[in-house]
Amino acid sequence: MQDKTLNANAQAVLDVLRADMHHPTAQELYEQVRHVRPHIGMATVYRILHQLKEQGMIREIGRDLECRYDADTGHHDHAICTQCGALLDVPADVRIPQEQLLRAAQSAGMELSDYEVRLYGRCRQCTQQYH
Ligand SMILES: [Zn+2]
Ligand SMILES: [Zn+2]
Image (cartoon, rainbow, N blue to C red; front, side, top):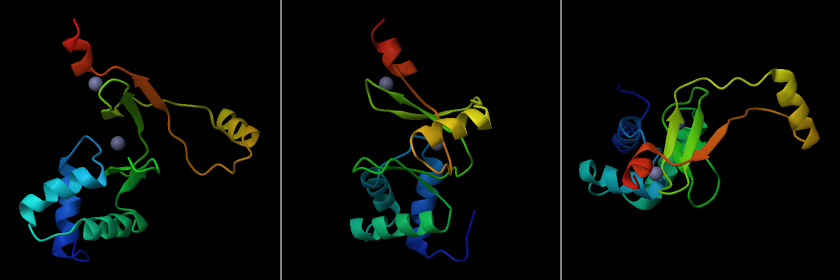
């Protein structure tokens, strides 16, 4: 998908992110984007990620250094492998009644804007490795 408002660098970052199902970090994205845009710098990748996020074209997951990016901006939940750190999409819908969510948010003193369920465990690859 070509987006006219994006420059070539931003388009490359978005293409790489859309093709990567593993929710890459900025560093991982940078290493992939370099294959197609050899002159791109890490700072540019950060700037582009920020812009794409502001435009609502990607999502940021987590806020620490290990922040990951997701080209799927629709609501979906994530599962984290506690062994290898893989961040996977949860294809099945996890439904929490709105009133429960609101009560939970209220108890934390939060005005709710969004939520996601996070599953922890071992991914398929890690389970297979140790059988
Ligand atoms: Zn794993
Ligand atoms: Zn995702």
